[in-house]
Structures are given as structure tokens and as C-alpha cells.
Image 1 (cartoon, rainbow, N blue to C red):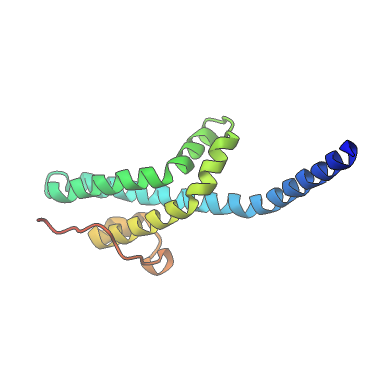
Image 2: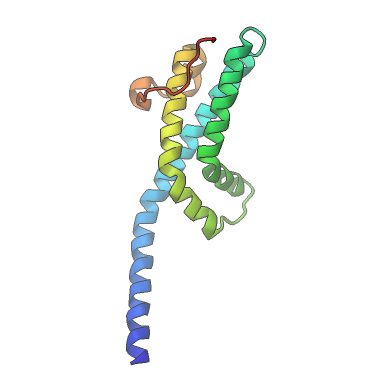
Length: 146
């Protein structure tokens, strides 16, 4: 009986491994695309913050808050990108964090792209895909001063 149970478990684990490998390619491609997209948005954001720190401090503070939200939403993906650049292993725990954060990171990245296009289209055009490609989500941040 134990051999039968062990055999079933072994086949299930092997099947799950195969499914994970097949899905992993798509997931890996999605994660890589999203990493590059959020990285471009973060780069554009940094440029816009620098351009506005002295001439519009309120806008700069608003953008710093948006940057913190992007960092929070995309943190696991950014950590994995850093580890890859350092040629270090990505732990299974971090892989699961990435999987669980991809949707939130994608939404926050799209919101950021929309915010950046409205804030400074010249800088946004240098870093980001056009708004039609990036997608338009309703922004959560207001850029007007109180």
C-alpha cells in the first residue's frame, strides 16, 4: 500500500513539475516584461522628480509618494532583478512572492505610466511606450495643490 501511495504522490509531483515548467515559461516572460516596464516607469519618475523638486515641491512630494507605492507593489520583482544582476540565486520564497505580486505590480505600473504621461509628456515619451500601448487606468493621485 505504501508503494502505491508513494507512486501516486511521485506521479503527482512530476506532473506538477511539468505544469510548472510549462507555465513557468509564460510566467517568466510576463515577469521579465513587467520588470522592464516598471523599471522604465521608475526611471522616468526619477527624472520628473529631479526636474520638479525646486520648481514644484508639492508635485515632487506627490511623486515621491507614488514612487513608494510602486516600490511596495513591485518590490519582489525588483529584488529578483537585483539578484539576477548580481548572478545570485533567487529563492523559491522570492519566486512565490513574485507570482503573488505580479498583478498588483502590473496595475501600479500602468497607473504610474498614466500619471507620468499627464505630468511630463516629454520625459515620459523618452522612457515609456505610448499611452495607447501602455494602457490607461484611472489615476489615484491628484496633482493639484490643496
